[in-house]
Image (tube, rainbow over all chains, first blue to last red; front, side):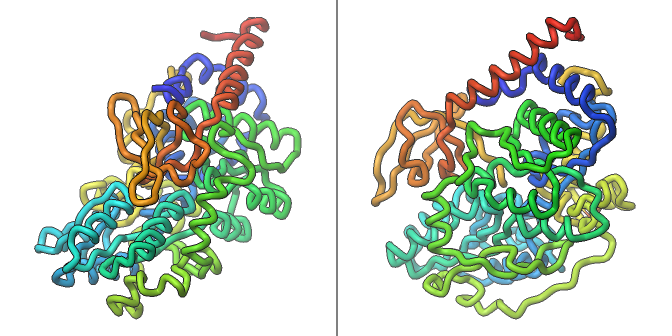
Length: 369
Length: 84
Ligand code: SF4
């Protein structure tokens, strides 16, 4: 497939690996923020192929993983109300709430449906005028324009039976939190390619200047990530802390203006709670007042639900790159993709699930990508 | 969920005021909303995420990156360091 296969070619991958190994004078600690990138890095065993030239730690960029427990509980409460149709991206269904998950609500007779796009939820609302249709609008900046478009279109059409349970989060505030913590060992960041496709990378320039850490915007194929790592190592070796773009076929400095505009028409920046991490000021989106009629928390009166986090799961440390999934005492034993105890074991973008799925099959260092 | 994949626009049309397109990903085709990529035409490649094209892929930039990888190979070959 064009724009996919050529970025998986083993020959240039070997050269990039050689180049990184040759340049790195010490094992730089790099973080990829996005769960999609975690997935590729673990799947292709890229850290092992680099054989100690860099250490990769995995960041908080899996929306499924950071959606807070109380939002999952609110979703479960709404989905259980008769005559509602609760519509969600598939990987949210197995995320454990305090006592249940959406799959169990569905098994118990709740009308919970999986959608590929928020527009599927709109279609369901049009087709079922007597039922209330609720869309579970989670995600990072990549997903926000699409979810915003659903609300915008619903308002334009005057759809009265449609609402959204919104839990949108933003990447830069989470990075700021990591860099402000004196526990963080991260020396360079692979910036998330599809978040930057929407947002551009001016925000990361501010972070690079303020914290003196380099960022390279990376794509999602093995060569994209190796190139981002090569550029980061070069910056670190040369003592630079700039923002560079290794995913220029999709990302421009200003991002996608049309998408950003629609997103800001519908959403406004607000404080958000992150699962495993806690509250982060100004770290997400909520619906603007003009869209209050589409806010499922208000429509169904579930604003007050709150939930404490379970103690066994160390996902807080995993999501901040302070621990690896294998450091968790229940990893692969009591916690597996079939019986997830924490959200990072649910989604294929979660670090725990990626480790569980691929860690046992990785090729030895020096093997072909 | 964050998955976003490149596909080629094979046809574009309007549905209730929105610009939609048929996008081919390898063997399969899917409808995608093209409102966020007003510049994208039939034949262009776009990155599609949850039913929305979020960027038109820049063919020149893609070529440039691939050439860079080639050149790196040529340099390594010339230096006799290609461990093939
Ligand atoms: S392995 Fe399971 S319990 Fe441990 S951190 Fe990951 S999700 Fe949490």
